Length: 296
Image (cartoon, rainbow, N blue to C red; front, side, top):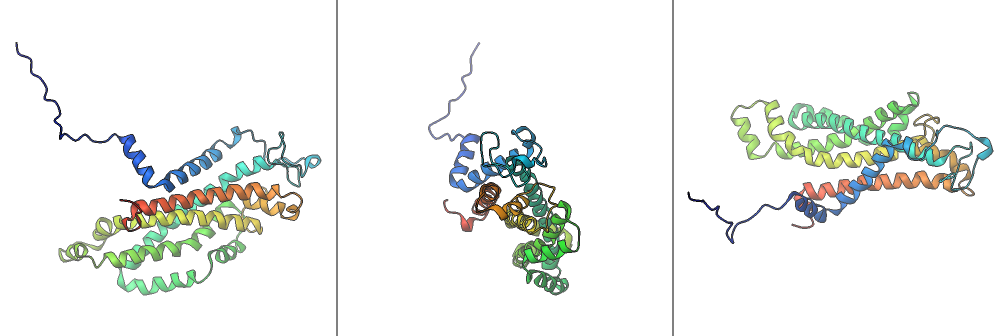
């Protein structure tokens, strides 16, 4: 009976690095993605587990305890109606994240469709882009205010208004990418082979628009959160009964000189969330676009 010995790996054998090491190397090269991802995950967890984070009813009114300073009982103090600011800020995370993510997804989808159609169909490019140029001539915040003036205050209407204001940004970006791609040799070869336009768009054009559009979606998400806070601050956003960071700051602006904590905490949460989204966007840009890569 003979025993076969398994050959041992020679000195030139190369072993594939473990997955945790690859992930660690990726985050070392792109620390913005790691920091932004951690901050965003914390905000998502705060929004999901708001009822279990030591909060109370954010709409509960107690006039006897109004405008209290931060303490062990009220961590962020109370507002002019005696409502717990900590609970309102924590629950306000849900409104900002819902608005930001919804606007980013819907605006990216619609802008992608418009940009692909305008960039690949030559006869429609002029008409569509003149409409896009007209919409982009109006600042997004002013367009959102005008649209909200035509409807009643609600989270859904805020999402629709901000989405309409942000679609032109995505459409113009995608259209520019398509214009550069449709002149590439492989696209011309596909046309010469008789491939139909939908097949060319799906197989050759669409995959190359995903990376820039994904990065743009992060900036749209951050912009949507800021616009929602501005709309709520001026009374044109979500109803005052719904706790949002813009509503909290609007209610505390009359007392900001003597009770600055009413505005400080929602503004701090908004700033951290916007910072997390922007860090994710910058990190994804560096990772997906080699022209912006800092290290090889």
